[in-house]
Image (cartoon, rainbow, N blue to C red; front, side):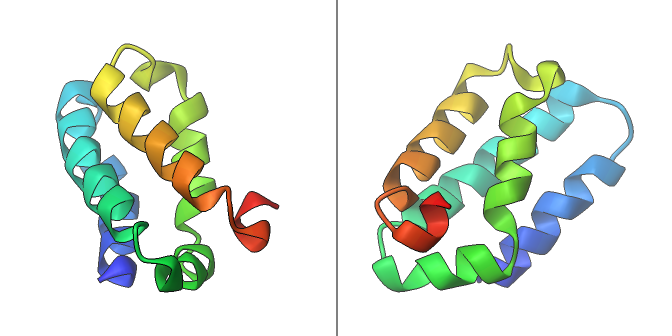
Length: 89
């Protein structure tokens, strides 16, 4: 599931330059990933699928600063996984 969401995360940026559409899709993906992060065993998959660096890129991207739900989902997910040493580094 996480690998599919990781690919969806990457594919979202091929939908043109409509940041609002991208944000709506990213809210759904990040929310699902956040819920999956409740399972500690998912941390390794989040790392191996390179989901966390991509979410950090989105979080830092000025185009998405005004999309509060997206930023909140990413913040909450990063907060959950930051308790794991490997994820935090």
